[in-house]
Every structure is written in structure tokens, then in C-alpha cells.
Image 1 (cartoon, helix red, strand yellow):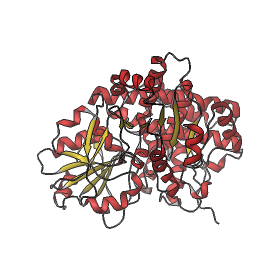
Image 2 (cartoon, helix red, strand yellow):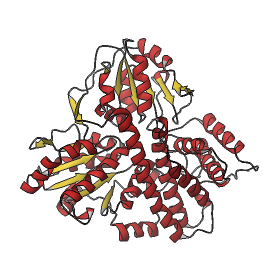
Image 3 (cartoon, helix red, strand yellow):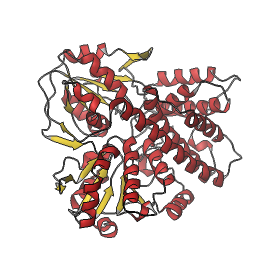
Image 4 (cartoon, one colour):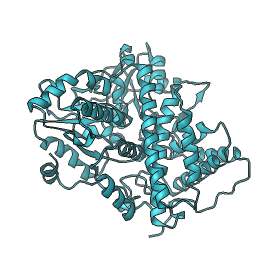
Length: 509
């Protein structure tokens, strides 16, 4: 097979090895090569030690996350803009992608760190949008990107750098958690409707709460309802957004079903971040993008002086039919760290009484592969005395299942978006304190985490930094882990994968 590109940054990469003709995500070889060049230019910019370039670096990294920017013109423009910021003239070699690093283990570690930085950039982008910044994180990102060009760094150096990336991953998620909660309040237990109203609608997908805030302000009293999709579901848990009566509920499921669900929604659709599947022609005219996400022939909403004008989306929605109802009922969520801390006494009593025997962390990402049905079957097969802690879109595999509760505590506790995996770490550390344990790994917690893209990579590195061991990753281990790097993770941190539901429950629960 002729290799036109090479990318293995996501879990669904072709044949579990790498996409070489076209990305499974839908990106073309042209887009893949432009993303490679943008990453190279960003590393060079970081090495140049030019000041005041952090926002450029963050957006560049975010643009190259899986299912974010598919627009070659925008990527080309970003490359040109980046090169202009570098004092000396830089020529980008044709082959600057993953395979430019010949040594398999060095390549593996460089990509592990790069993908971790991409995840950090995504979370930093959202924190920065709310005017929360941290120069130490920015400095680490610049210095680390520059180090990835240094051929003198060996396996030991890069392994240490990967673990340090996890430390700054924790700091980044802490910054974003602070930005979100101080701006919009701490998430609280909330019932989210999954039916539809009678008005035309706007469906907002992605992760950016600032975009949602601006959209809700601009759509108030416009006769248009706003619905969340995918990772935006947890926006309903924040007290700030509950004042908007036209903020109806959640429509649909995880990102990979959007081609069917966006068709059925009938209204305008706003993609605020990654998780875009290339839209079908039948509804492309109703899709709008903003921030790091873009697709050819979809209208892009730019930010001007800190504001975004969503008038084109609103006017589009007004001309559309109301959404087609695809389900009814409700989802219960809002179990981020502060809410769970309020329930701490109840949780501790349930554990001491034996009503709760295990907690299972099933955070992470959903995806289109049939093998991911494992997570729904695993949730259904868990004993009734287990509680699932979740965050991210992986929850769509089981959050709508009738799994019941334990003494009033729902058996699925949703902390929120993928970045709210930080909440799950805080909850684990709080339980360690409550039970007077000297090691978080002595808690009755099992980690069965599904991953898909690069934000999951920084979450993993952050958990490793916090000392969490014996994490099971699935459906497969990352293709970018060389055998030797995978061996280090297995031997030092107990990283493993999944097998079948019956075997895993027997061995872990």
C-alpha cells in the first residue's frame, strides 16, 4: 500500500498501526501533512524563545487534535502566521511527520509527550477563554516543545519528560476546573431532559462553555431553543446556565453518531471544539464552526475583540423545522468533586456497611468500533453493589441504562466532560483521606478507561503523576507505544488492557 501520510495519534487508527492513505477520522493526506508541518513550525517557534506567542502555540496544538480542523486553507494560514513570528527564516522539510524520528522508542516517547501537550493545549484554550492563565504551564509547554527537537535527549530523558508532562497536566486541569467553577458555579445534581421542544433549535457540541454562554445570551427571547450534544451535556450541571429557560436539554449521544443525529436534529449546529465528524452534504449548510475546529465549506465564526457574533446561526435556526424526537426521558449527572464531597458521609457509610463494595472508574472517550460495546456490557454485568464513576463521552454507553441506585446514590455518577476526570482523581484522593489510607491504590477502585484521542493521553499522564496504578486502557493500547515503552508502563505503573467482560469482572471486581 502506498503511504501518502502517517498518523497513529487516535485509538481508531487503521489496523491498529497507523493511517497511511486517509485518516479513519476523515482527514485527507493533505490535511495530515499540513498538521505535521504546523506541529514542526510550532516546535521551532517554541525553540526561538520569542515572547508573547503562547496563544499561537496553544491554538496550533489544538487545531491538530483528532476531529478538529479539516480545513487545509486555515491550516496553511496558521503555518504561515507561525513562521512569520520566528526571527530567523525557517524552511520546513517535506518529511517532518512522526516517521522522521527513526529510533522507535525515541519516536514513541516524543509522540506520547506531543499528544499529552495537545491535550493540555485543549484544556488551556478553554481556561484562557475565561481569562484564567498560568505562566508556569505556558513556560513548560514552550520548553518541552523545543526539547522535542533535541536529538541529544535519550529514552531516560524523554521518559522523565513524559512524567513531568503529567504533572503539568494536573495543573492544567486544576486551572480549568477553577475557571469553570468560579465562573459558572460548582456542578450540582441535575436531571437533564433528552426529549425535544416545539421551537426550532440550535445544537451546540464540543466542550467550550464560554461559547455556550455567548450563544445563550444571544438566543434569549429569539424563539429558538438550545440543546447540548456529546461532551457539552455537563453544561447543564452548572448553576449559571440554569437561568436560561430556552436551554432545553441534551440531544443525541457521543460524537461518532452525529452524521445520523445531526440530520435528525433539523436545526443549526455549532461545533465549538474537536469531535467533528466530516458533515454530510445534506446538512453541511446548517453546520457552523468556531475556535480550533473547522471544515471546508462550513461557515466559521471568528472571535473579534473577545466576542463572537452568532447571528448567522440564529438566523439559520429560525428557518429550520423543530428537532425530530429520537428519545425521551432524562439523564442524571453533576457529580463533580464538590457535589460528591457533600455526599461523602453517605458514601463512606455505604462502603462500611457493605452496600458498596467497589467503585469502577469508566471515564474516557466513546467511539464507533463495535468492540466498544464491551463497555455497555461491562456496566450491565457489574454486581449491584458497585458504583461507576465517569466523565467524558464514554458515559453514553451506559448512562441511559436502568442501573438503579444504592441507598439513593445513583450507580452511575457523572462528573462531566473529559477534563473533569480531574474530579474523579480528587474524589479518589478524598476517599483515601477519609479511610485513612497511605496509598490511593489501596482504595476499592478499579480503573477501566476507554480512550480515543489526545486529551485522554494527558488525563492518563496526569493520573500516573498522581500515583494511580493498574489502569486498564481499551479497547486497545495506543499504537504509538513502542513495545519497550509499553513495557515500562506495564512494569512501573501496571498499565493493562481489557479482554472480555466475564473475565475482566472475575479478575477485577
